[in-house]
Length: 253
Image 1 (cartoon, one colour):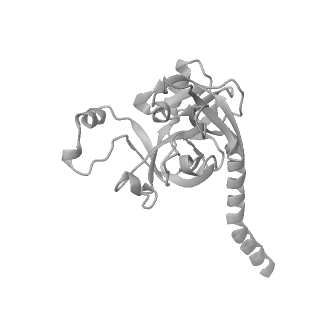
Image 2 (cartoon, one colour):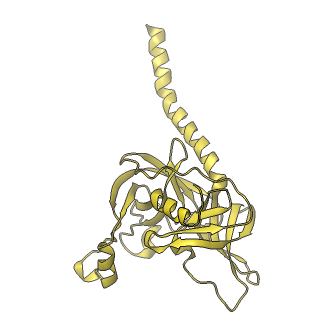
Image 3 (cartoon, helix red, strand yellow):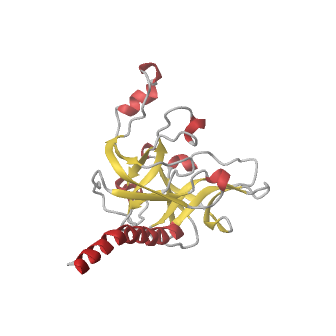
């Protein structure tokens, strides 16, 4: 009886270690497919400007990210092009990229590079239920910290309309009211994203299968306070919309 009790105690104590070890394996699997998205201006120093995160999809030549990460037009007065940064800050490979297609309504974009990288597995169109444990990997505050991928873990707190909160009625603009008439469902997360996480893959923490794309974090006070006082409420676009955008360009996911 004593031996059985000790055995059960060992299993109880080792369970968190086993769960943690599983997450270690998932992150190791995900990281090579997570890339930085930005602009390269060869005549500038530094030449590379990191603007957000993306991840490899399809046959390995395509990168998914947020539309707002690539929405700023290139400067026509200088030599400048969109770029995908793979690796890390100590060993960065830069690939010239072109925007294949965009979906501003769902804040999604797909880029293409000549080099083939390792794609991530994309989940089917069905929503995953609230309470599902997820994680995401990207480059929070990457413009300052550089190409150091970081992973965050949480759960799906709600499946909610994509409505931008307003503190009072006088903050509701005509554009916002129009947006409220065309809302779609997104994932609200019990996890904290930061500037630079835009475009990060949100994946099941036990398998690494991508179920969403991080696209924003609710800022409770000022934009400048997001680092010192994060709200802990982030949002992700379901992959059903990424699948639709990919299908438009005949990209198999």
